[in-house]
Image (cartoon, rainbow, N blue to C red; front, side, top):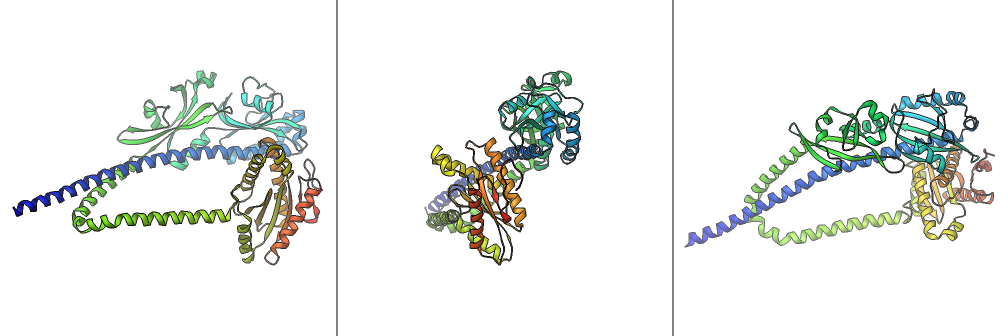
Length: 506
């Protein structure tokens, strides 16, 4: 009878151990499956985010370059007179230099307001042709005088086009400048970043005569204009309706991503970059980890079950609560530090943190220049459009500041519509020029992109470790108010230099 009871309890204990091992194994399998899915999702998200960053980076770069050409004094007569030869001589070296840096820059195209070509740097012998019917992005930019970007098929194939109106400092509309980047640019960047195989697809209906000329293979309504060797074998397994899928080939597993869409300027998808990466090793490593974890769980549970079961059951709940409390306190502490140091609306540093950080910089013996900016007629904007519009302008201006100035410059919302920037290790004259370029950038961006147009005034004052913060703030503030008294939309620095829109420095 005693042996029966003994084996009864031994059987119960063994049953608990067996159930625990099975549960642990199931949980481990679920956990590792989620980890694999998470890795796959993260790879897809990283590739998509990087792709979008590439597009934004190109747009920002060539928009700024187009603005530079628009403000060049010689550009106005060349565009107005449509002087093909003189314009070619003027920009040819720039084009060659840019192509040596980025070989995938294919198109640099100057176009008149009536949609006629003035100069194609990539094909200078062809000009004077009317693009109205064959180039929608050109027609729309000339019609709206707003910059547009997107993929579009031209005479020589598809490129990502940044098409920008050229408006000189006197607000004269000269036409437009278009840059075109081959899709290979995005493929090469993705390959370098993620070590992937690639395929470039273009919507067949948009290719027109090019489809007939080159006889591209078709995939779900898209023409395959370029592919690596792997995709020649995998193409028939790819479903373009799915953003991602796993494909088996020769005992290997590939993650195929098809959601890297290339839209035209109207948001319509005209091209796709499809990439594939081998995740076989990730799967195998995941499987080995699962087996090892399951074996370890079995050994640990068999060895420690009778010793730790009661203690673990008694104290696990308390330990979990303690851990959750510590995590909550840590998160709350971080939130409080962030709230204490930043402005809630714009996300910029607040005045207290700015003063503390600046004092530390000066204590290390460093010097720099203080810039004060104020949004012109901000109260009128609030009165006309409401405080919500005013808040939107403040947020957009804060984004302009963080996008224009260096990452290590101190940027702060000083109060209301007033902002300050400390540029470390930059003389006052250079900082003044940078502030003036920023003023022009704000004016141009506001006119081109922002829903509420605005300008800024600014004051510039140098500061070093021997000077007083209060004195530097006071001087920069005085110069800011001088700028506002002199008519706004200008920057005042040493020697009362001022710059007004449309004029040179006086």
